Image (cartoon, rainbow, N blue to C red; front, side):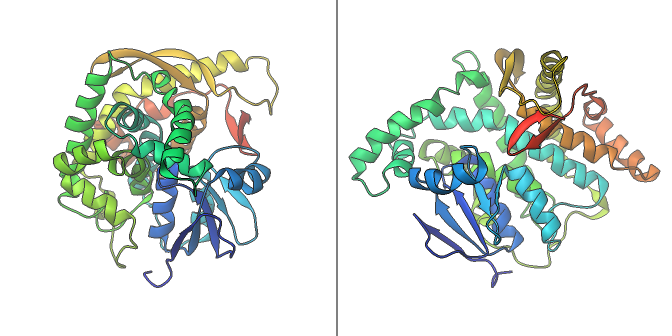
Length: 380
């Protein structure tokens, strides 16, 4: 695996390798995809997503303005990390990063949703409400003016960053909820991750999985790399910090996931918290989608937001936006559960779900399913 993995970061790479990833090191979901490509052992070039790359490649080939984007050897551009990983797991069966055993498979789907969408709250809070400046402004400025002097990059980056900073209160990050968000992340999330990673190199044992890659999104790009939050991680969770560095290196071959389809106890604790706090938001989002979709035809594109909902973090209540994209991600969890048709395997999965308070979570009825079409979420 060491011999097949090659990463080259350039501003505008003139030579194509097997795959080309358009991303940025400060981009949350780029951290997830990069970790997947590295741990999958795929050769790829990484190209910084400058304004020029958006104009020339990303928007023309995907129709959207989101990164990361992966270009295949055939010149097809794939967008959205979950969809990209699904495509690559099918195309490159070995080494597997998505377990086939029922509990670990469902765990990876659950944990991907949790890391991608719920831990986003912590990632956005620590980036924009901690001592990460002018570092963050320099990072944003590098997209628009990569060769400009530092003071110009900082000026431009501050203007570009203002858009992303504007998302912070929409996620329910306010003066009222910030203390509970920090207590939840530092005393619960980091603490439980430190417990599991102090005893083994990856979440599910001796080999990386899709769950590890998903966790790299919020933990690498925002928490580890940003200076203010990076200090907190290294002080409170040194084994988690070491895991972040390990995930950006090709792993040693031959590692195995936990035997007997087991899930480490600290990860069960994390999912218990997610099911308690995040699932009410998802349930309300599904209901809001059903109201919005009534009478609308198949193929109609969903709005990105479906209104506001109450939510809680660490026992403190707030209000946040409901995102339609979450329904597509939730469907993936439900579909993974329903694909477990073997009666013995289903019984084992059901017992595990009961242990973490997730029995009802996989039985949420979705009146109108959605699908990704041309990189947009539409009614199925």
